[in-house]
Image (cartoon, rainbow, N blue to C red):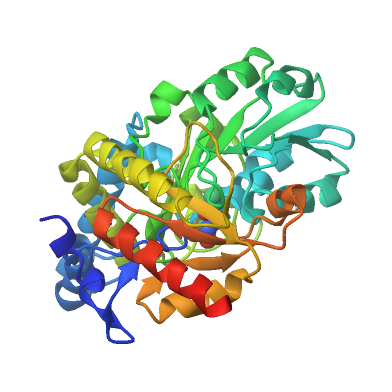
Length: 400
Ligand code: PMP
């Protein structure tokens, strides 16, 4: 059983079996990921890339094997296309401050969408402040889907870059990014895709998408916190300037000048999160062995079940009803504050998230302060959805 491989799911909370429905915030990790982290610290603990001693060599081998596993998961042409980062936040900031900053000037435009997480909004606002560039936004509709009939006219001769989320963390909307990338490329605009919520749920093939950059967060895809990767096309990684300066990213330093290391080391200054990278490699192996299409199919079964079950809760209003959706449900219940619901159902063992989910513009659109969000993963069960529904009914009863 897959579920049994996740020790975090075997706990009780307030004396009740944990029903973990906060996977969009962070997922649980399989034993195999925990073992890989522990194995590094117990048996291979050394700094990587520089050492001549055995431990350093075995640690380097494990770290680089992890990069290869991630390259296979994303179907990147080579592991050299992957930069280890702390997560999507760092992936977006890196692209903004290197690739895009080096090719943008005042009056140029950067295009994002209304469905973005703050981490795919704020780095672009910072870049716009630094350069005088202008941020443009692809609008959404009442279902929480992007209005793609407007994309063509939003891609102007001034657009220098587009950065879009693959799957919305707040509403679950799955964006047709392959089509969006093709439209942007028709106008010569390179594209970054924020894959934080896609990688845990969908097969991702960066070559098929033809994206210029794709970034994922380790902790959302059953791996360690503070880990992640950024995929970039080789020609971009070669051409763009480094991000952070320091050790590892150089091949020669004098006080007069520095020669940078080859890609991807050029973007990996300092001692990295070695255990995190190795743990993330184990997560990638776990996902490939489980099968991404099996994970995606199971997610859709759960989505359909949960959609039906939640629709039977009186007074529950779903926020975001896209046709293409991952198992993420944002909702409010008439007359009860989301935080009260979250706190009450925690006492039934049910973990959900409440608030704006780092997507304030989405809730501004709907005129809401926030929502309850239940986000499922393939290891959740129909019975857990039933417990969620029962606990929501209990919360409602307390307020009536
Ligand atoms: N994008 C999306 C869609 C997310 O859901 C998140 C995390 N909630 C991020 C980006 C940022 O990821 P991280 O905090 O791991 O850097």
